[in-house]
Image (cartoon, rainbow, N blue to C red; front, side):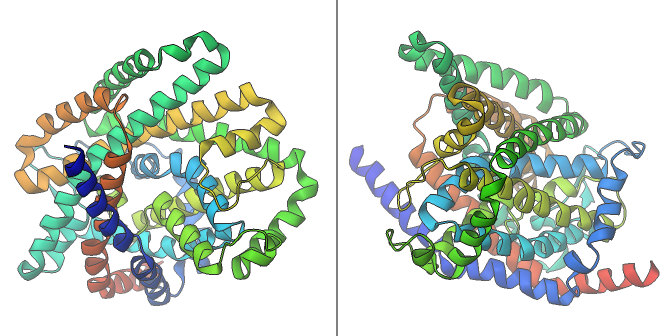
Length: 466
């Protein structure tokens, strides 16, 4: 059995290194650059209009009909899948292994990722359809099927298979396990006697999470939208507020930090005094990779949430994708980066780091126990919201493969796996899910580039009318 597990781990590791290697990252950035040029750099040129059509519509009256959610709810559902542990632990890992310069390359990936996600969402609305339950369904599998034709239909099947399977891992087991670890860390900080009861804490967390998930998920699409539109703004405001407290309390370090970020982007070794062997290739790979992993631009997940929007204009809904990437990476990931770099917390450059580094940075202003609670609370809410959004993604993929009749069964299995996921050994599950998640990008990017001419014409027509 051990030999089989070792074999699976080795094979997955090889595939993963290809999926998330330089060729894939270059393809993701290249697609973003190409779409940016084709839309005349919409994400910069029309950013004021983006804010007006997204944040300016938050309090607009709910006009969504049956089988639809509001444009803002589709945004928060998509953000629920992106704003998460990658913004906390992932950023810490990028900085420790890629140096401060990784933050700059994270910004680069987001800059062009805004255009990619815009294109994905435009196509999702253009080719969406109603299912047998009356819900709007869409995403890469539908714009492949309805936009590229029968010859490339196998790509839609591949995307759906990768999505349906990866949802159980990256959107369920990994998130439930992360919540259980965060809760146990917080409990142990205040009750040292609980250190011998980790398995019981994990089981209890799994049961509670599955109960709340069932309450939301079995209520249908509209309930998911209503929960995420309250949960995402609440937890984002809290995390941003705590981050600003740390940054402002170390404001005198900001100049040095930005210098390290920009200088480290082109010469990481010199920026760190030559003491650590971090080269520019590592800074680029870690920065771009973590940026894409965080905002998911090009992976094809978020369009499945946006396809349910009551918005009829593909371009207007696509603008939410621009804001989504901006908020996830340029705002939240940058704040985490500045907290870590400004705080003076020890950064183990060259070694992997995670949430503990972020906790240490927050501890410089709030103390160790309070910082632990802040990060544990943030991770708990972020991870739970990811469970909600990824259940929708996985269900939509399964529905494309087998029809609407599997929806309830898929959700019930998804809910039950949360309990097991809270106590499960994570490494292999996470590794396979990460690979499947990356593989989703291949059919999606083929479709986005193949249909890019339609995106460009829709964009030109919209702004010509405007």
